[in-house]
Amino acid sequence: MPALPLLENADSRSLLAQAKALGLRALTQVDGGRIGEQKSPRRGFSVEFAQHREYVPGDDPRHLDWRAYARSERLTIKEYRQETNYTLQIVLDHTPSMAYPLAAADESEKTVSKGYQARLMALVAGLVAQGQGDQTALWLADGDTTRMDGCILPSTIRAGAGRILANTLTNLQPVPGPESPGQKSDLARVLGQVVARPVRKGLVLVISDLLEPWDPLASLLRQIRVRGHDLLVLHVLHGDEIDMPFTGDVRFNDLESGASVNTRPHQIRQHYTKLVAQWLERVRGDLQGMRADYALLRAGQEPDNGLLSLLASRQARRKATGAG
Image (cartoon, rainbow, N blue to C red; front, side):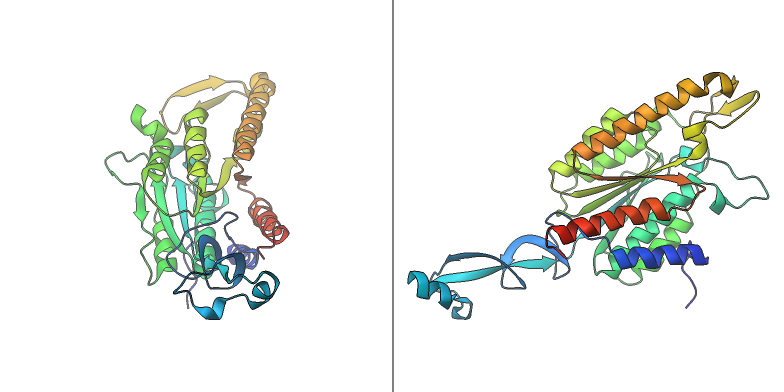
């Protein structure tokens, strides 16, 4: 079978294999449509003991706890927590800023672009979830306000879901702006759609450079958590945006607005990196306060450390709570 798009090289396939070994399971109780591997708030007669309740006429006598009856002379039923599947809602930032840095004619986008890293992470997460028997939906924030619904791949897709997801992500190519004022907050607009849609409790994965006003984004992410969803945020930035390593006279072009400015980076680097560090600390702190998982990934570098460390941390926390 030919390799899926975005997984043609050995490094990306190795990343997928390691991610599958760690798994991407919900840390909160989720609601699904069928039996799976995730904890559900529903109770029935399945695998994991949940509680006793008093026997009522019509209950199946096979679930009577006779040992409890011997102690208390009261008929009680043993209830078990059902295992269920979840839906992974992937919210992918595809706005023009994700095209940074623009590849030269002789360079591969795969080595430099934030957009490539983001799409690879979306595919890996989707394939891991699907391999567990879970469903995936893909939401796209690309500045296209003419498309009313940001959900471009619904979770109802079953047959060939992995290849459809891979082909869709491969065909997405972020391009520079300019954007209209309404398009500059497209991630917030799409997150608002996720918040508004009545979907079962599941897992929401946001992949973005978060280069929009943070307060509206934080408010929407908090609402996602309030609705009971498990939340992960993969923050994709390029090292240039964090460290400003440029020298000499440099002309910076805004990929979204089309505006440009001339400056000497060495004169502003100290102040710039201080502001970036403060912003990153605020983002990280706010998400931790929501009990959301966060990882910073640097485009152009191997994503293994950030992504796999995040999955390993989640796996350890599941084991610590006895979820396996």
